[in-house]
Amino acid sequence: MNIEKRVLRAAEVRRNGLVPGILYGKDFPATSVQVSALALTKKIAEVGTSKTFSILLDGKKHIVYVKEYQNAYMDHSSYMHFDFVKVSQDDTLQSNVSLHFIGKEVFNKSSLVFTVSLDEVEVEYNVGSGISHLDINVEDLSEEAPIYVKDIKVPKGIKVLSDPEQMVCSLNQATIIEEKTEGDEQEAVYNEPEAE
Image 1 (cartoon, rainbow, N blue to C red):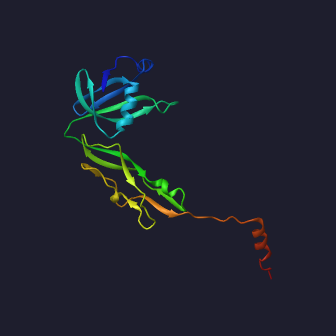
Image 2 (cartoon, rainbow, N blue to C red):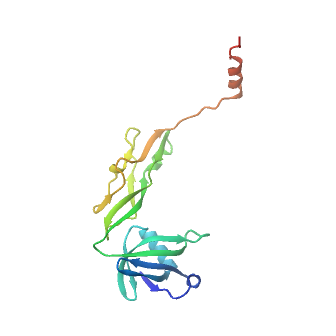
Image 3 (cartoon, rainbow, N blue to C red):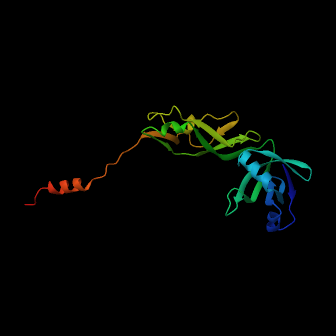
């Protein structure tokens, strides 16, 4: 991915179909940069904010990750600004990754309610081992056995930092609440004992 140093004002950069941003890191001075809006959109969709990737700036290769980004106010599919953080191969990173629940559709036609208590976890990994999300298969989930953080299977090189005893998702019977009809209320009043 090619990026360039930015010399124009942010508004002018955006008018030219580019997105302004900043690149910084350990022993690397903060540098104003810009990148094609299309290239940035594709890259964020691919790596999220946890996976590292390579960029070229002034012909030099750097390993970075997306620290944060700002969406356009009226169009959340486009970006107004971004932060890239430069890292080295020896660095250890921490990030929150989202949880994707596979097979939850099987409960749509049952009396069971699938409840998510946690939709992301904090993980630690070496540069190059990052992941954008974790898949959790819930097809065999039962009422008696909810899934906890400690039950999540992660790829080699990934360490989960979140509390292992924290519940991730569960399955419960739907609760049906019967509403009183007007007749029921009248019956209740009719049967009320007279005051002495």
